[in-house]
Length: 115
Length: 113
Image 1 (cartoon, each protein chain N blue to C red):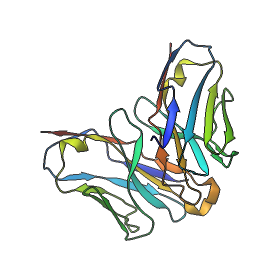
Image 2 (cartoon, rainbow over the protein chains, first blue to last red; image 1 turned 120 degrees about the vertical axis):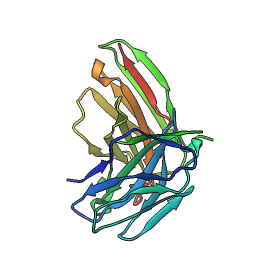
Image 3 (tube, each protein chain N blue to C red; image 1 turned 180 degrees about the vertical axis):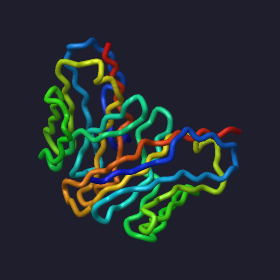
Image 4 (cartoon, helix red, strand yellow; image 1 turned 180 degrees about the horizontal axis):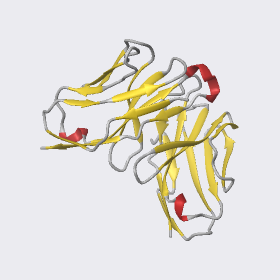
């Protein structure tokens, strides 16, 4: 079956530090990959996505590249801000399953950014 | 104008009671979902409906019964609540063919005492 593994957290960084959050996946087909963000007290929001190998998703200064050879989709940001403090979820979906397609989430990692 | 709205936002109740959570989306999406988030933030899909038809039922106890009166609404009814049902329940929706791009509600925090 499909699965997503995220690095253990929580992660605490100072403002303007470089961020990397690791994510690897296992999938039987050709999944699409996603990063979702959950700010305190809110629902999840799609941050970025990539639908095929070597695609790079980007949004709000965050980037992630779909690496089929290493089955990874690591999230990076060059300079984090206090407002980036949130829980980050890596996820995959297998579009070949059509209407039965669903998102499989990783465990999530909490990022705290200090001023 | 909230895209996916859930009510109530907070629910505190006793074991054995029956409760419902309502969800509505105004995005015109065909597919709606219920997810459960536990205390460690782990998210697990419970149900998925496409145009009022049940598509995914992820080994959820029979005490949980979703109902979709139309494609804009997906309600969750829970019978005989147990302590382990305490969690945050998220409703979400997506357009058919874009299953990974979900729009989530703000969540309903259920506490069973």
